[in-house]
Image (cartoon, rainbow, N blue to C red):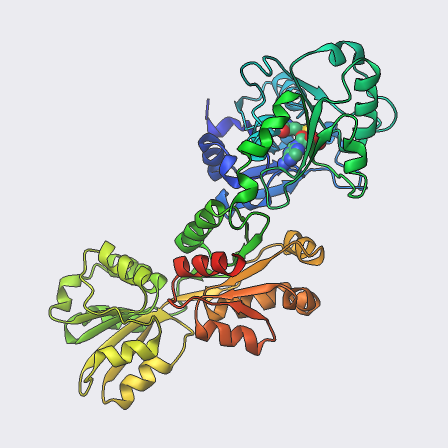
Length: 505
Ligand code: SAH
């Protein structure tokens, strides 16, 4: 079934918005995809699961902009699959609930291309859960109807049997009904539903922009009149809506409603994203640093070939440890050559990475900056140190050590570069003022971020809260004119997350 040579279309439901609601299978297919066709309602952060080489094609509708025709999408799916590619068709919610998934699969099936269907968490259940509304409940509701609030032309009547729908006793859920709320309410009352029936409208459910209006069929139009309800919004009607006040939870999380930009990649980003989601924030993934091999391996190779000459080995970053270990393996050198050398690290994550290699860390200074490490080294006179690190980095550490009479070999183990990525989604959010915090975990994240976003977005960035991991990073940010309001006492990612939580308490 997964015969790559034949091409394959995988229809994947992305869930209603929160990244965590993508299924494991959906994630696995994104990791394998050669091409991804995605919609407007798909969380754009999901691209971080794809391979670098994957082709990303946006086929969604935008407000006021003509969408790609369904037939065009079908053809694109077919053509890409015929190029013997794994084509993932990523759709919001579940593809078989008002997602035209059936139509696309019919087109694929008709030309004999193999396909797989990965269901998603539909907004019907996902958004209801995040709003704290059980869709069925003993004694309150024993049926659930999922109804379209749209019609072909998106104006005028909705072509459904209002009489039958109004006479149902259980829960009614309308999708695509944001603009049709007055019509839906009017029809239901006209065909016999009590004006006292509870109703909730949930906009952008499961995301930082989740907003809920509650009332009754008789009051909801007036209640929501001041705010313009825009898609995507889910309308839930029935007695179960009354349970919300007791069950709602998402809106009470400490960082609910906050969008926090994560500028790092890799493990650091993963732990930040997980923690932010736990706190109820919406992480916005915008990596600004890519790490690649240095231009020249020879300084590091020289050092690795002569490890026994060192008294101390200093790691200043997790990447330094990773690339050091990789290179050691590549040139078939042996860590045992280190013999009695002491191993120093800046920061607990770096220490953890060293320990993962089975190497004991002798010193992790109290403060996670170079100055603090120098203090803990003590007498350096005549000793030889190796620092495998980024091609460009702060010179404080080697300079200070040399002043203290030490011999220091700085060996580039990796290079950081600007990733090539689109700024569009971030630009949109910054301009509409819906980004709350931008996090920086090193000076280079600050400079790269500003390079990628450019002059034009600087005013919007200056209006956003900035959270920096430590004083060096904060200085770089302040020097660039940014407003650093959040900085933890301990310079770690987890303390940074705590600091954001405390800031908003
Ligand atoms: N296949 C999707 C539905 C696509 S139709 C699913 O299973 O969820 C688009 C409609 O879904 C929107 O108009 C809205 O009614 C609903 N919807 C999708 N995501 C939503 C969200 N995050 N919050 C509220 N409603 C959402």
